Image (cartoon, rainbow, N blue to C red; front, side, top):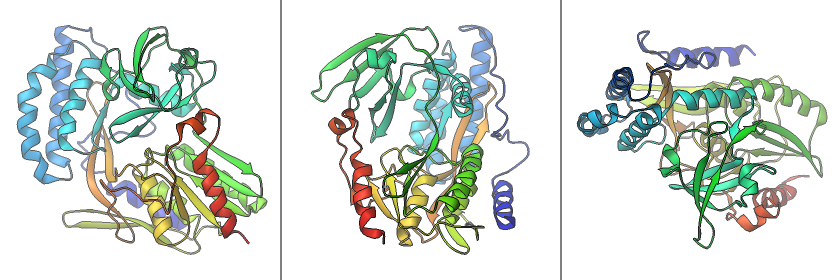
Length: 406
C-alpha cells in the first residue's frame, strides 16, 4: 500500500497552498457564527464573508480571463448583498454572484447547509421532506420520493420538476429545518403546477454507499462521493469481492458528485492490474498526473459503469478513463460535464467557498468540462418506469454485461 500512501500525501501537498489561506479540512467544520438577523453585526459579518469570497476568486480562480468581469460585477453588487438581513439572503446573493464565473465547481455552502451535509455524511437524522432531486441541465427533477415522508404524503412523483421553495429558486433555497413549514412549487409531466405546503421532519439519511449481490453472480457497487469514509468502505468491499469472486461488476456512479482526486485514483486502480494513471491536473505552467497501484488484489471481471446527469467531477473522470482504456462499457445518460479541480476554503462565518482552481483531463487527454461523458449505451430517462419501481439503466447494463461474461 506504499504507493497509495505516497499518492495521497503528494495530492495533499499539491493542494495545500499558502498557509495563510483558511483551507477547509474534511474532519473539522468550524462552528457557525452567531449574529442577530438584521443587526449591525449581521451586516459586518456579511461584509467580511463577501470580501473574502471575492478576494479568493480574484487570486485563485483557474480561468484568468474571467476575473476582470467578475471583479467589476462584484463591486457593483456588494452593497445589495451585504445588506441582506440573514444567512439565507447572504448566500443567495453569493450564489448569484458566483454564477458569473460559469463554473459548476465554484459555489458556496452556507453554515447551516454545511452542518446538514456533515450530519448526512455521519449518518445522523436531519430535517427532510423526503424527496431527492437530480439536476438535468438547469432543471431539478425529483428522482426519489421516500415512502412515509411528507413528500410522499403529498403525492409527489419521480419526474416532477421542483421549481422553487418558499418562492426561492431551488438552487438558492435554504436547507429544511425541523418543524418549519415550507412551500414547494412543482410541475408534473403535463406542466400542471402543484403548490404543496409541507413540514419537514427528522429522517435518517439514505445509505451513501452499498454493495448488492445480483442474480447471476453480479456485484453491484454504488457510492456517492470519493471521500475518506467511502474509501474505507471500498477497501472492505474489495476484500469481500476477493472472497466472493463475482462473474461481473456493475459500478454505479449515478448521483456521485466526485470528491478527492487521490481517492478516485485509488478506486480506479482496483479495476486494473499494475500501476495505473487516472487523471492529469494542470494550470498555466503546472502539470501533475495522478497514479496509483498496484493493488494487493484487483478486479478483472467484465464490468459496466452506470452514469447520468448527476455524475460529476471525479466520477466523470473515472467513468471516462475506464471507457477509454476499454476496461468497461459506460451505460446511461451523458454526465454533468463539471470537471475542474476544486478546493474548499473556510469563510469567516463558518460557511464554505468551493473554488475551481485547476483544469482536469483524463490520463488519456480527454477534457470533459462542459462536455461530459457520452455513454457507450445511451438509455433515456423513463420516469414512468422509475415510478413503478424499475431501473431501465441497470436493466440495460445487465443485458450488456451478460454478453461480456464467459
